[in-house]
Image 1 (cartoon, one colour):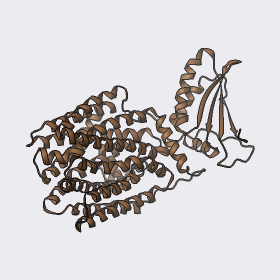
Image 2: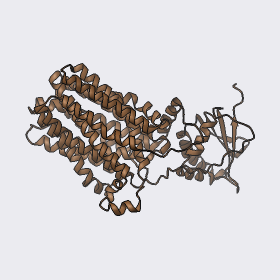
Image 3: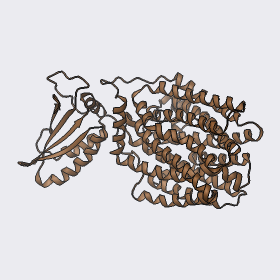
Image 4: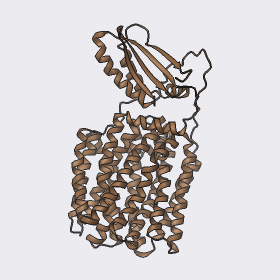
Length: 537
C-alpha cells in the first residue's frame, strides 16, 4: 500500500502511474524491464540464428515451439507448487536456472558448437525455467499492490514488457549486423541479475495458517476444479486460446517473411519487432487507459482483436517498403490492448489462495495455443507458402472474434474476494486428526413451496462456489415426506480441507450464501452438521 509520505515525495506518480509509488513494485518493475530486454534480445538472436543454420520454415517455427511447449506442459504443476511453497525461494531458484542456461548457450555459441538442434534444446531448457517461474512471478503482483491499483499495475507490467520489446529487437538487430548472435545470449545472462538482487532483498510477511499447506496433488486437483467451476475464468480461457492460436502465425513466420518475402536483413527484422514493442509501449501509456474508461473490458478486447486480425492480413499482402513497419507498430498497440486485458481478468477474478494455480491454467492454455499454433502455421507455410499461411491465420483470427458473443471477457470488479471468515468453527466433542476424512457437511433449509424454484436457482450459484473450493461431491436433496425441507450435502477430502475452506471463504461467497439463506424460514440460521467417516463400506 502507498503511504501518505510516499505520495508527497512522489507526486508525479498519479493515475495510471500510481503503483510506482510503491518502492517494491518500482524495483520489480525496473528489474522486469531489464530482464525482458534481455529475453527479447535472446529470442530475436535465436530466431535469426536458426534462419542461418537451417532456413526451412518448419525448423524456424520450431524455435517458437521449443519456447512455448514447456510452458504448456509445466504451467499447471508450477502453479500448484507456487501456491504451496515459499514463493521467494522458488523465484530465486527458477531465475538462477534461466541465467545459467543462457550462460551455457552463450559459451557454446561463442565456441561455434551450437548447432540447430542444440539451439532448440537450449531454447527448451530456458523455457522450462520460465515455465516454472511464471505462475509464481505473476501471482506476486496482487500481493504487493492494492486491489484498487491492480489494473494500473498490470498495465505498467505490460508497459515494461512492451518497452523491452521495443528496445530489445533493435539492440539485437545491431548485434546481428556486427557481432555473433552469442552476444545476445550473453546479454540475456546479465539481464537476470536485477531480478535476483530484488528477490534476494525482498522479505515478504509470512502468514501463519492454522492448517498446513496443501499437498501437491491435492493442490493440483483443487486448482483445476476451481477454474472448471468459475464461469469468468472459463470465458477468458476460451478467448485467450483462440487469440493466441491465430496470432502465433505472426511470430512463427515473421523471420521468414522478412528474409524471403520482403528481402530484408537482420537489422530490418529487429526494427520491425522493435516497432511492435514501441507501439505497445506508447499505447499502453497513452491511448489504452482512455479506451478503458470508455469501453467495458470485453469491448476493449473485441476492438483491438479486430484490428490485429486486419494487421496480419495486411502483412501477408504487403509488398514490403515502409508498410510492414507501420503495420507492426499498429499491431503492437492492439497486442497490448488484448493481452493486458486478458491477464487482468484472470488476476482479478481469482482469490489470493488459488491465484497462482488460476494463472498457471491460463498460461497452460496460452502456451498450448502458442505451441500448437506455431507448429500448424509453420507446417502450412511449408506447403502453401509464408504469405498464404499468414493470410489464413489473419482471416481465421477475425472470425474467432465473434466468440465474444458467447464468451465475454469480464473483470473481478464488484467481487469482494477478501476472506470473510464468517463461518464459526464447529464445537468439537471428539479429537480429529487433520488428515482424517472424508468429511460430510450437511446444511438444512426450510423453504416455502412457492419459493422453491428461486431457492434452487440460488443454490446453483452457491454450488459453483463450493466446487471452486475443491469439494469432492455436492448435492441438494428434498425430503419426499416434507417437500419444504431441503438438505445441501457436500463431501470434503479431509478435516484439514474443511478448515481451509473456513479460512478461504470470501465476502462475495458470503453474499451468495446470504441469498440462499434468505429463503430459509425461521429466525435461526440453517442447521449445519459435520459428519466424519468412521469406517469404509
